[in-house]
Structure formats: C-alpha cells, structure tokens
Image 1: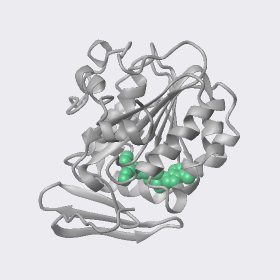
Image 2 (image 1 turned 180 degrees about the vertical axis):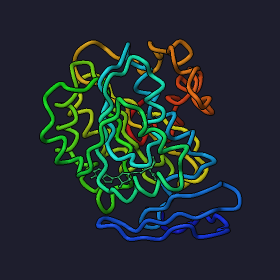
Image 3 (image 1 turned 90 degrees about the vertical axis):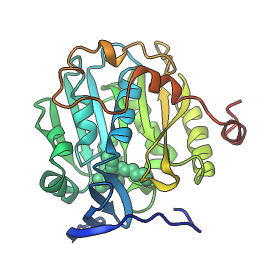
Amino acid sequence: MYAGEAHSLEVEEILYEGKSDYQEVLVFQSSSYGKVLVLDGIVQLTEKDECAYQEMIAHLPLCSIPSPKAVLVVGGGDGGVLREISRHTSVETIDICEIDKMVIDVSKKFFPELSIGFEDPRVHLHVGDAVEFLQHTAKGKYDAIIVDSSDPVGPAQELVEKPFFETIARALRPGGVLCNMAESMWLHTHLIEDMISICRETFKGSVHYAWASVPTYPSGVIGFLLCSTEGPAVDFLNPVNPIEEVEGAGKHKRELRFYNSEMHRAAFALPNFLKREVSLL
Ligand code: AAT
C-alpha cells in the first residue's frame, strides 16, 4: 500500500499470532502506543491513537443528521466504532457486519476498551461478508452506514468498487449518510479520486472528503468519504446534531478524547494539492 517507506513501532512482546480464514491476525505490546492490532501486516489500531479514528468515523456522519436511529457498521470487528455510536441516545438499532470472527474474539481478549461496544443491547452482530449482507438489505433501512473496513487488499477488495456503493445507497433512506474510511491523501490520491468519482455518480445528495491525524496509519493521516443520498439536504460541514448537545454523549463511561464540533468542521479543510487532484475546487 505504500512503496518506498516504512514506519516502525518497537515491539515489547508478541501477545497473539493466528491465521483466520481471511487474514493473519497479530497483537503485540508496543513500547510507545500500547497494544497494537495488525491484520495481514497492516496496523489496524493502537490503544493510544484509536480514539482519533473511531470517534471521527462515527461522529462525522451521526452528528450531521438529526436524530439518527438505524445504523450499520461494515467491518469494525474490534468494536471501537460501536462504542462511539452507543453515545447517541437517539439510535435504536446498530447492525454490524464483520467478516472475520477471529478479529472479534481477539478484540474481546486484548482490547476490552474497544470490544465494550458489543455490550450495548442495541447491537446486532452479523458475521459475514458485507458485500453479500448489503445485497440482501431492505431498501431505505438505515439512516447512516459506517464503513470501517481494512485496506482494499484481501477481504476488503470489493468494498471500494461501484456495485458495493450502489448497494449502500439503496440501503440508506432518502437523506441518509455514508462515512467510508478513505485512506491517506499523501499516499493514495488516485484511489481517493476513484472513490470520489464513483460516489458522485452513486450518491445524489452530496459528497465530501474529511481527514484526521492518526500517527500509526501510513503517513500519519486517514481520510473519510462522506456522502448523502437524495432527499433532505445534509450539510456535513456544520453539524446539525452537535455532540456537545447529544444527551448521553457526556454521560458515557469514557470521555471523548479527540472529536468535538470544532474538529468536525476543521476536518473538511483540504490542502490545495488535494483539491486540485480530486477536482474539489
Ligand atoms: N476499527 C479500526 C480497524 C479496522 S478493522 C477493519 C475490519 O474490516 C477488519 O476486522 C476486517 O476483518 C473487516 N473486513 C474486511 N473486509 C470485510 C468484508 N468484506 N466484510 C465485512 N468486514 C470486512 C480498519 C482499519 C483501517 C486501516 C486503514 N489503513
């Protein structure tokens, strides 16, 4: 995914090594970022900086619509995104479709601060391929879909292709929103450009790119693609459902570490090179 460079973390101890039907799963204790989850050699999360990714990918879409009720998470088997969604008291059901049961089991054993997300009674777990799951999902079922998937190699390959986005748009209600993990603007500009052009064709509401700093992801940043379907207009840039006013968000066991309404607005500011390259100017 990123030729010509490498990022190193000092390993104190290997805690788990396994091979599932889909990927190699590794957990290690690092000396500076806490425990680390690695799938097929790619860092998925560390205890120290997971807050930035999980809080942004969950609250960017959920704070952009009034009173979200039905939410789907694609991937996200560690449970961190579920933990963040559970702050929203308006939410009634949270479906999650994760392909790899080993990720869920490993998270429950080594990352209790993330897997706690599964304990919310609103959560319904489906272990399977999200591509298939979405093909069988009723039209207009969800207010928001969050795609917390791995990089598009291995089991996540199809998750960046047009047919997948079409099933997502179909599964969303009019004016429903998608937030999709969208790689690094420094490394994957072409992939981002492709995803944006597919989404512009598929989502008739609006399409925006946002980003945040996550030190242990390649190049230290990660992007999010935010799209809405045709229907009530969604202004992603100015949260209509600000987290500061979400009853329950402040009462959650764990304080928000990264996300707030200022970070939300700031996340949509893009450097000129990206605006030019993905023709967002
Ligand atoms: N919460 C941050 C961690 C992830 S994990 C991504 C998850 O997506 C993995 O558990 C993987 O098993 C799951 N996944 C991959 N393909 C599919 C699929 N087809 N259907 C359902 N689940 C799938 C994301 C880290 C982002 C890393 C950025 N470089």
